[in-house]
Image (cartoon, rainbow, N blue to C red; front, side):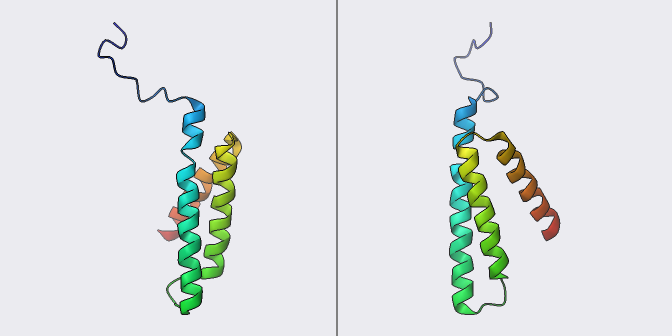
Length: 89
C-alpha cells in the first residue's frame, strides 16, 4: 500500500539532490554582490556595502561547501541566515 498513488514522497529527497539546491544560495550571493557594487558606485546611503560584500562572500563560501556535501556548512548557512533575520527584525 505504500506509494499506491505512484508519486515520490517529497520528504525522501536524496542528500545529493538536497545539497545541490545550494546553487540557489550561490545565486543569492551573486545578486547581493551585484547590488552591493551598485550601491558602492552610486554612493547610496541605503546599503552598508562593505558589510554586504562580506555577507555575500560568506554565503558564497557556504553555497560552495554545501554543494560539495558539507553538512557543517549547511548548518552554518542556516544559522547565519537566522542571525541576519533576527538582526533585521
